[in-house]
Length: 284
Ligand SMILES: [Zn+2]
Image 1 (tube, helix red, strand yellow):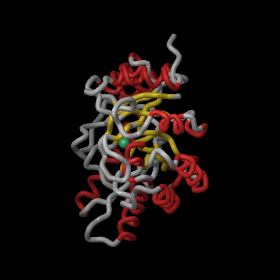
Image 2 (cartoon, helix red, strand yellow):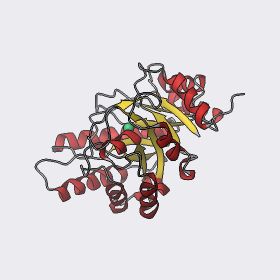
Image 3 (tube, rainbow, N blue to C red):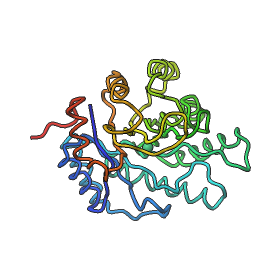
Image 4 (cartoon, protein in one colour):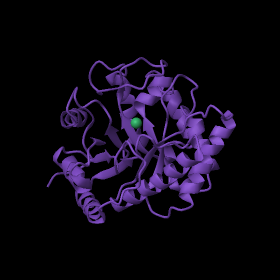
């Protein structure tokens, strides 16, 4: 299995990669720029190239996460243009760092639009961004948290949006376990059903990343509060077992977004590797 965590770029992109290596992680996620802003970053190309080379040499996968204000359902024209420019910038940084893609949350239901128009807006946004993008990094659409049936919480929506976009080959998926648990998409008891549906829909063919998180709230409550994998979270170890041991997940990076003040990520990765094995990286 390939385990990793979200890391800061306070020491640059190469610094984050080196930190992942020192933690014995096989993967890491980072914010390509200030996570609270959509402003375009004039990034250090050299640092990014060194990150890419270091990751290739040490067999580490990386992925970026778009800043928090990024939305595929922007509420006005100004925000729409900001998001498009920002995401193109994220893709460029990710490509330069050798990352597999940029995680982007599925949009939200827009209050002044119909449901269908909200979906159409997501497709328009993706088309506009990806028509200008020729690099290798993909947009990785992440399933939303929410109550059962909330917007963007089902595999059907993710698969359909990808299919209806003009550039499906530039889109992959990121599966967040806490989000899936929050809405009952995966409630801990229905893995076989989930898997069957995921296979029928072709979701797993494009799954590139797992956000590996436990949940502080029970399933179907719609709360998105991440908890450490081992501990008082509502998803049980035996339930995670089923997911981790599913063959289709064997080569996909599992990245922790768990509260590191409750257990340091270094320690948590060690526990994951003890339990489920480490095929992510061989230290020289
Ligand atoms: Zn996530």
